[in-house]
Length: 390
Length: 238
Image 1 (tube, each protein chain N blue to C red):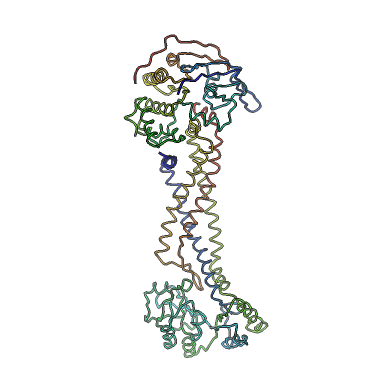
Image 2 (spheres, rainbow over the protein chains, first blue to last red):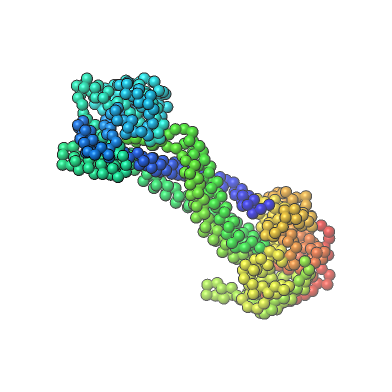
């Protein structure tokens, strides 16, 4: 027998209470790991996007205000030395629905000539680019959308726009996009959209956003400054933001997810600390006599302190593991995404997130066990034994 | 281990309750020879449990000296006292206080976790201790599967498994029926006579006192009577 065995057996003392406390840890920690995953995914996505040296040029008033078609060439003209700007890609929101379906497919019409240049991370092969350029109805579809509707490369389908004039367009899938930040978006050719609008008499309306790709980080900053300066005090005043800031704006529009997640995480930690502390105090009160006997037969105060504290930590980790591991497995087995009106973020749980959650649970268990362990350490054997006799 | 003498000189123990000072032991002088079986009696509040705690190293005197063998307990720190207790004293309590989730053998093994000892050696000691108290066949039973008397026997096995010099017993039969009490007292007598363990026992039961070799009667913190039994109740084999 070892002290570890004694410790584990102690947890069996009141199985119902142990199970309830473990569950009290499991459920909030399951939520916690989701929250942590969202925050971590955002951070990873942010790091990935920062490497892409992209910025969004949109109307200063709102993303929904159109910018004129001619702005693309005016932006290009700002790079007179041809050494700062790689390409400009105009985009326009389509937001179609599969006929009969409720959910909107986040679809954007993009300039087909520059899309593969501005979005090299979409990783279109030469063959796929050739198809994209050859087929006017071509589209590249995020993996999550493709899985949802069962689309594959070569699939033909139609979408009806969610904005006036609500035209229905037919598409041909030329690529399924694996890139995590693009798994819930679909891109298709803007010339196809413009032609269909002209045919309906709606006329060209311009772009919601012009994406620029710079040659380096310095150039990106300079271009952002120059673009906004060039269109200042014009009817089409612009706001140019790097991709991280732009996407953060969308995520904020869906309800400040990171902030909510952080708040949720803090609430979970505080509640669990209270639950754990309360359980350990109850457990301690029941075992005063026993701990007094431990001390009487030669267990030093510090050893008793460690015993109670370790029990608290094990209970917290065990309970948290019961919630974290299934959620971690679930998030990695089933593709989920954080909903949003812009580029959405796939929700996957990293092992770092799961391990981090267990570590935080251990810290909560440690904090919750500190006071009861201190009480146990300070327990005067004589007083405790005297109370037992009464 | 050989039996050790216990010597208390001018021992005072004062408890502080709010602004009140309560003198529980007042200048007590007492010597107990190694291998003796001393029974302490007296009314509630007479200081008998306090005396037991001082001899067992659970508490320190306000003044005076408590010597057990070569150890001057009043000079020891809490850490030293704890270490000393683990090697030299076995405790038996009225309510047994076994760990309910451990088996009889595991409960007996608990004090041995503090010693550097192989698991085989620990096992051997546990078996011997349980054999002495007549519970070798109940080794794997948990406390809730044992009677009160059997639980107290396990507690006695736990007290002797480290081969202590002194066994202190605080009303060990207080929670047992007459027949079981007799069995437990006979077992303590056996430990005293066969294994030369010094035993100091507090009891309210005059019949239990008959098992001791010496009767110490305390009242209001002073030793009122000190009698030696010429014919204590003889132990029988368990």
